[in-house]
Length: 231
Image (cartoon, rainbow, N blue to C red; front, side, top):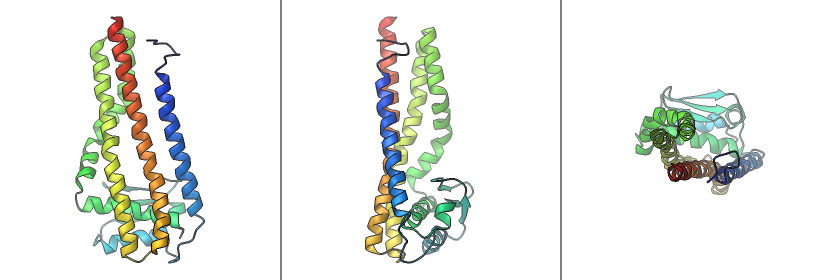
């Protein structure tokens, strides 16, 4: 086992980074493709979000614009559906689909969807884990302190757990979005198929992120095992 810059376990990081790059490229390409296709209803992302929220009986969630590209999200603390300007103001298939997806999260919050509640609860621990895991782990390697190696692995496992719980949250939000778009008549069945392509591409970014994190965790375990043999 090598512990220098040419550690062969770097291949795991390269594979993970490659998966994330491919997923990111696909979502951007797909989103760009359908951002040029106007929704037959002519509804913008803002209008779509408001109709879906009202149809779901949700009156206390705001729909607001935010800066940036692909910065769309639902903020449960302020109860706001935040849409990037290219989604908020446009009436493309991409804009409608993304707006509906974020409303899916708002509906999850309203219904106390268990995976969303779990994800929200572990956010602080996951953030700490992702920030401190590798520094502590490498200090453990340099100083040959096995407790630090183990603690680093445990901390990073929290970040992996967060991404694992994120998958059902995102897939469920997309499923809700498609049902609401069809049920409210915002999109036709053919347009719903196009939206599904956009949301599927977006979901793959979460799958790739999880795979990358699992590979990083595997690398930590391999490095820790190599250090044990060297002791």
